[in-house]
Length: 432
Length: 125
Image 1 (cartoon, chains in turn red, brown):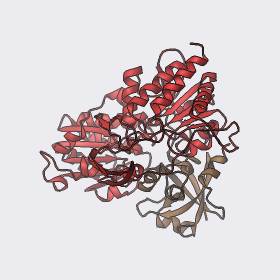
Image 2 (cartoon, helix red, strand yellow):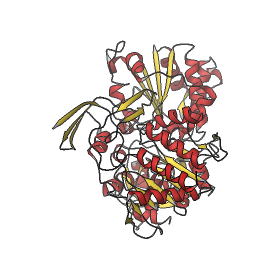
Image 3 (cartoon, chains in turn orange, cyan):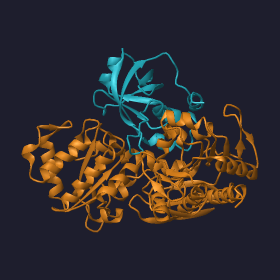
Image 4 (tube, one colour):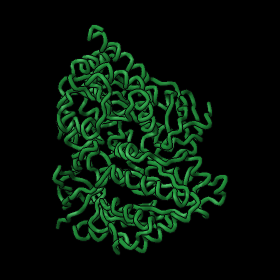
């Protein structure tokens, strides 16, 4: 029996690094300190056993060798005029690097799961920058925590204990007792139930509410109506007072902002509020990233191509314009004529019309698990699970890079090996 | 009786705990439902656990009805996943992001059953 201490969790953007994993005969038998999400992933689920292929998507798969599946994947991708390589967030940075190389080789579009998550936040950061801090700084200093359109009780269960609401640090030794917590949401979530101040916004009105807070902060409360986006002026004034008089404000935001009306403009406005609060006190803002290494893809893609995601290599040089080059843009326009889905599940998490198009074109899936993408795939290549069976680098939601441990020996090859072989075969097929 | 509601989708702990196990009944149980507050459920005239049809301009789907006292009147929530995505707004509105929240929907009782993940995706083939 082996006990691995200080192991990292390959589930959400908290990237908790204090887990204890018990391994017996190359099987994980216990996970300590992880939340329900991390524990479920690390303890494991049914896996795809062997590579599979089929021509007709309504027929059954037949098992094939890895070489046969890799060859077919390379043929599909090299025959494509407008390939899309999508997913990446459940894989380590070493996989991203190989994927970007393949995208460049193919002249493909490469996009990651941020496209249905925090990609609008990236657009806002282009406009306004990101006044931020590491989660360590927040744990040690923040006395006011704001969750806006974010429900960490469900999506990031250990965030409040490790980094924010309940954590105790150098200047926050009293933990929850000395912290004020504000939750802004459209419904009273379990996170809202724990707040000192719950602000219920009418769905789609976040931009208005942020604008009202900015107006009050800049001394123009007189122009603010009695109610803004379902929130009373009285409550808005009270919140501004709490924010202004704090020692260190930390705002965390989620899909409630990125997916609601105004999308990236909501974040743009929230970043402006953060910047303006720094005239009164210290204030930082952090996106609550979903997958454990969705931040990592943005980092690798930025240093390799100059852009964080939705990069189009069709022109020979990287081109980026979400709204035109993001995964759902090209699927909905029926532009994509072949797709490779890896470490992400477009079949489950894209709108019906995008999945409908995936069902019409050749699809290669590289993933440890059978999921809705498998249902629309032609070639399925099972791989080892990054962060459990493969070591590598991942980036926490605050941009801190950490090294994922290997907990057990894999039964399947890693994504990097599959991508290297596909790239090699693509070059052969093209006579390079 | 039918109800007009604004639909939002999002994460839940059970959706996350079964996300790598999407062929399981646990995943279906964790994601194929629609939450409304007790008043809105009362307006539909059925009990939680019954099947409802959720229709939007973009599609329709059958899910189980669930109660959530935290929802304001006229706000429906379906956990993110293939059932929710059968009815979300695909328009990326110039920034790559489909409309996963704020979709006008019509919810009504139905005798139809909830499709399994495989049956749901088979509709797209």
